[in-house]
Length: 313
Image (tube, rainbow, N blue to C red):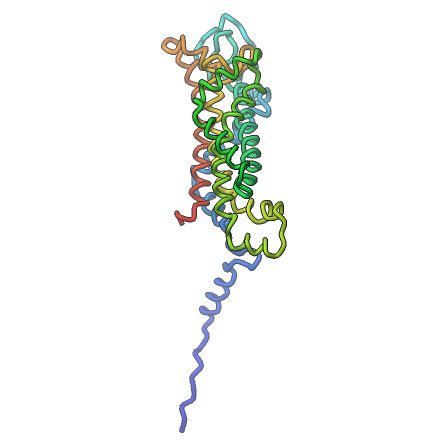
């Protein structure tokens, strides 16, 4: 007599466990990727949400300063010299500035130049870095040599001294001049990173295969190299926004950036330095807004860098 194989009994609990595992298993269209894993990691970080909320609030202040001013202050943006340098009160939580204007309204209006400068300079520098980095890293030769020497010159130029010398040539010291100067001094780091990424990827197996199949240089750069080389540059660009905002405030504070009657955090800090002991609110509130904005960009950039770094997985 031969033994017959016994079929294991399938219980209802086992069926439920199998169904649950099938339900939680990602679909083929949701296959794992670095960007998807990074997003899943970023959304679990409280610092990321705190930074995003802060930046959204600053963006709202830059886009609609009048609406927020009328909502948060009593009497709107009225100015009366009798209220000059008066401290915070119930209807005016930030007090008044030197001209007797509501200080909360003035601090809110100082948000726009900083954000416009930070985002415009970073976007322009990123575009320059992508174009020059792709061309220099892919083709090399004399173009790479010239751009490398130019970046060496800019790296050796002190930021504050270089910006001061250039801005003196612009009589109005407007926001456009600030953006131009900060862009001229801020494109080098991202260009170097983009160039090194392109050089590392130019000899990758998938790029060689595409080249053997007849792909043209433009297609190789835009379709195969750029998507894989751009991530580290974007992370640096996010960190660069905070650095640009700090640089813009520094130049305003030194008197070579924006000029009165324009409003910016740097100008407010400059005006408050002579009264900091008797009226500390004049220095405290613009410094708080400036620090919160810069810190939010730095925290967000650090979190994105950590999420996209495969060595930290």
